Amino acid sequence: MLTVLFAASDANWAEYAAPLRHAFAESGLDATLTREADPQAVDYIVYAPSSPLQDFAPYTRCKAVLSLWAGVERIVGNPTLTQPLCRMVDPALTEGMVEWVVGHTLRHHLGMDRHIVNPSRLWDPTCPPLARERPVAMLGMGELGLACARALAALNFPVTGWSRTPKQGTGIPCLHGQAGLEQALRTAQIVVTLLPKTPDTENTLNARSLALLPQGAVILNPGRGALIDDEALLAALDAGHIGHATLDVFRTEPLPQDHPFWTHPRVTVTPHIAADTRAPSASRVIAANIRRGEAGEPFLNRVDRTRGY
Image 1: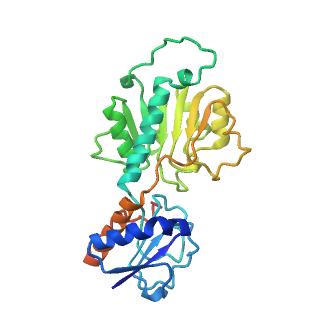
Image 2: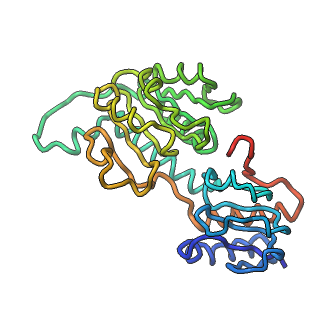
Image 3: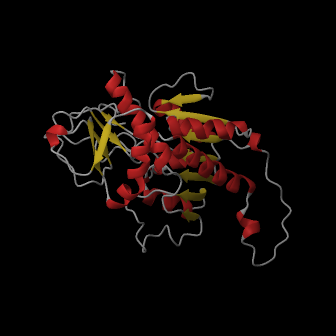
C-alpha cells in the first residue's frame, strides 16, 4: 500500500480529502492518504507551498512532490527538495483563467464601463472597433497563456504570443526574446501577462517596456504580481499613457488597504480569483501522476529546476 502525505492547510484538507480518496479508488491505487506519517514511509507528498513542511530531506522514499498550486516559485528553490516536483495543471483552472481573460478583454474592448457606470445618463453611441482590429499581446505561452490566446483568436482578436524561449506548433504567432517582446508590445492595444515568476520575468512590464505600448493600451495581469513594476505602472496610468489596468495578482496579498491601486480611477482590482484549482478535477490530476509514477512513466507537468517552472 502506498502512503500519500497531505501537506497543506486544514482548509485544503477539508476540501481535498474526500475527492483525493475517490480519485485514488477510480485510478485503482491502493493508497492511504494521511496528514501524519513516518517520513521514511511516505511514497508521495501532495503539497501546498504554504505548508509548514519545508524540509524534504527526511523523505528519502518519496518519489514525487505533487503541488496543489500552478505556481511553484515558493518551493522550487528549496535546497532540501531533491524529489521530482510537479506543478498543478488542472483543466478546471485553465477554464477559469480563460473565462477571466476573455471576460475582461471583452469588457475593455467593448468599453462596457462607460455604460455600466453612467450616473450622468450620458448618451454615447460610439461603437468600438471589431475584435479583428484590436491587437492583443499574450505574454506567456504556457498551458494557461496558450489556452487564453486560442480563445481570443477564436473571437477574431489578432493575438501575438511572446515567451522567453521559442515556441512552435501553437497555431498562434509567437515571438521570443527581448527583441520579440518589444515587437509584440509596440502594436498591442491589450496586454495579458501570464508568465511564471522567475528572476528573469520580474518587472517584465517596467517603465521602458510600458512606454513601448500604444497610447491608451490596457493591461490585464492574472499571472504574477511581480511581473509588473507597480510604480512604473502607476506613473504610466497617471500620465494617461496606459488606459486601464485590471489586476488580479499582487506582490503582497491581500492587497494592503492603503495601496494606491485600490483608489486609482484607471485600475480594477480583483482578489486573486482569475483561476483556482477545483478539488475534484485536481485530485484526478494527482491520482494520474501517482499512477504514472508507479508504472514507471514520466510524471506530468514536472518542473524544470533550471528554468524555475
